[in-house]
Image (tube, rainbow, N blue to C red; front, side, top):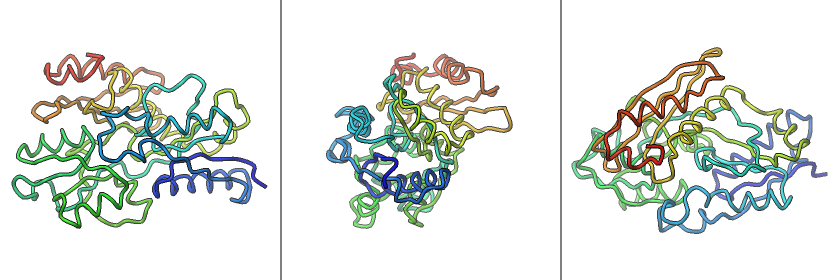
Length: 303
């Protein structure tokens, strides 16, 4: 008997993450996993692979079909990679839980280190953050658009279409792909919410929200929400090269971030520390924008 329906994108990684949520929910509720149905939903972001997301609608391309299914009560909750969820969500939605965060780092595929890439190497990525960070370290690199699922991007390197690419370590680990070299966070700070899996419910569905809340990992939730608060204060969008990472020690949260020019020619970084009830994202956003060069500030509506 199906007790709960989980909506998800249909990519191999998204399905793996949905199965993680199903296992956690079944375990928390004492159900068999058959009680939780996984409902794959095709998103626009999955269908359109030849253009950057920023050109065709941004992060909403990963969420709008799932949102519709949730609104129409075709599913009870939706599973997302939190870094792909737009910062401002509809009021009728509620981020009810997050799974424990995985490795937040990027992995470099195609070379041991950024420094070891050949002069003028071609790097495939669709991420403005990764583009800017790579050019900040190596202005000689050529950046080209590369989208698609994990296998598509790995194949582009294997086939010589590009010299290297960058993928989230969390996704590779979840798919069991032991490839690439981790890039330290002091060299490449990750995307806000990277490595986190979130589950949304309808805000008016108290039963579903309570069930999903039973699998919430409080530390991950607090850190990711701090990173998302920074994005909101910056009024960042999918064009904005921004990186952020929060960490929690007891009740004290530390939030680090950096903003970059699109071509990596300028960057500004900083950090704040405080309690969970403090508006750290807003504080850090103000500090970064005040110190950023004009070519960086213009990329953020908050500036």
